[in-house]
Length: 594
Image (cartoon, rainbow, N blue to C red):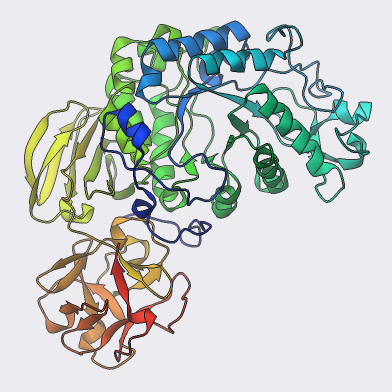
């Protein structure tokens, strides 16, 4: 049995978004031009509501390579290299400073300004007249046509509390909003919590966000976030929005999946795991940046979090460590695999490499417009094969193209990886293109196999309209006809669930049958009475697996004459079962095709 496509009770709740991701996408014109075509854009329906993050972020961050020593000169050089290398033209846009941009005098916490906010390290980021040094760097990044990001951690510095700094624009002070509990700041330390029920607490975060906006910040990463920091996340979300400047909000790291709907409500992205870096270089070297074991750890995360990402906020699997050749810590096939897995997952692609010393082969990988388009379609892929070293992920794009990623999980031995194309929504035969080579692989049908070297991938795209599968959306609730957890055990009862574009919600109508995952929709045990449950069963040609799609949106069982019905009617919740019932014209018997 396959691993579940989603983890139950963890599906994302999107404000005003019950349709599948592909109906959110309707034309990313600017990005399509940058990436070489074919992309569809997303309208403004998304979770965070701040006008950014409709597609996964593309950019660079200082942590992997620069680590503890960011300076204005270093960041300026990386921004210039992003432009001169052609990465900016390919769609990469964010240049982000991670930790160590501020003064850290010791364990008492970051040094602060007169309002309790972190004080810029003026030695590393010198001011220009009255212009703060971070604002100077942001201006340089913007002059390159790029966007600028910065790093914070939850809470308030002990220094602000000790100095009892005033909160800008209020009569309150730091000690009036601070708690005694410690907050994560991995490298400097010295942060304590904020009691957001206290007057002045939100104003403090607002003042910090306003400062960032005045510096020209376009992206804020909050590191060290856990389930106890929801107050900080909510406060920062509100604070950034009140600035009036569109600012992307990213959360890090190892976020709890059980709180996925919360992260989605207040941010544009969230790290699903720990650091991708291996921290295995000698004498403190950043190189190698990572290793295959760290990339392998993301396969399970991508499968488990599939239903939680989408336009407005995406699952973040950490930095892309491709760009510096052997110093990446990955073989060339493994580098293609990392980019392919992240692209299939619609993850942010934030580079961790040294852009001033790019390996030509790696640069070609990073600028591959066909692979970037897979990432920017904003559709999270589902894992449909999890068989030891055979890993296959698939997704259907808004135009009906099917993208299939076949991965050899093993880093030491070749492996033949196979997939039943019907599980990807492909019936009959089609043609496919290898997105890494750009070559056609000819006609494929039935079961498809490829032999892959250690850590290698084959990333395929079929022509638009290849998938004959569609979602069936209940008019009563906007939820989709769903095979729970992609279970293929004959007799599995069917239900409705939030539409998430997974193969277990994709149905083909073939010779009067409705098929998903290679099995047929079936009236249980040949039942013909009202209330008979509907299940998924091995296709057998019997009359209880024959269905008629009617012009009024109803679906009638040929054997029973009864209508496909969501139990109980009305705006049913996730997991509500599906049955057959006397046709009555109710909205719980009306189905539209997604």
